[in-house]
Image (cartoon, rainbow, N blue to C red):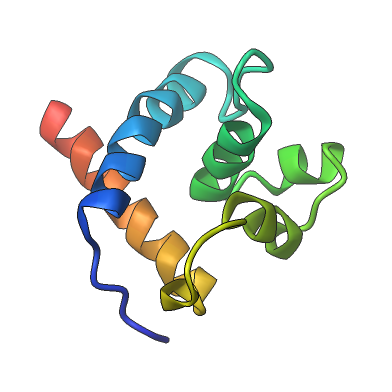
Length: 98
């Protein structure tokens, strides 16, 4: 597994997802809100490992990750490592918030 050195971009992305991940966990049984943009819904489902949601939307985890990562530089060639880094950041932000 590759290690992703996170930058301000990843930190801000994770910080933005934190509230949505928390909301999905606490209020919607781990499912994203249908009101969020599609990439954000997919990102939340990926962070939470919600394969049921991804399947309902017609995605496998790999194709959802491809959609979320569209436009990223080759620096993120290992998208699984990137996703794990985002998960770690989100979990850290949630722990900090208590």
